[in-house]
Image 1 (tube, one colour):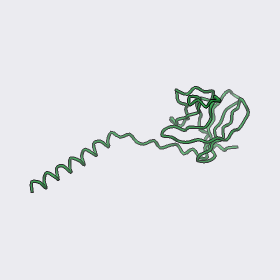
Image 2 (cartoon, rainbow, N blue to C red):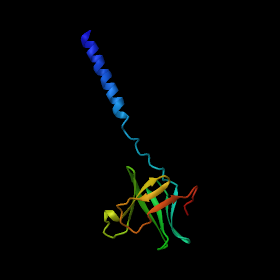
Image 3 (cartoon, rainbow, N blue to C red):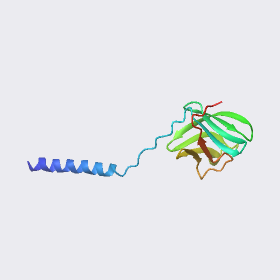
Length: 129
């Protein structure tokens, strides 16, 4: 009887410890559903770059200054959206376009050193052309 009580107390202690430790876990990142969304980054009044997510792994990037469209791949890794675009020909990781969603804005990480726009805003019901 005493052994059963000790096992019960130990089991209860384990359950309480588990519940207590779970209270400190942060909610896992839920990536923004990118497929079918369009995002723009104004360069000036007449020009803007855009990202149009055409599938779960491809994005159409439009560079206003160069007037070109490029379809490239992207991956969601943790909180980051890693787009396979580099501003340096040696594919330096610091020149890669890496974005994070923050309150409806896609922002580049502060550590990035590239010529890409720093912020993109979502176009509500935007269509990719």
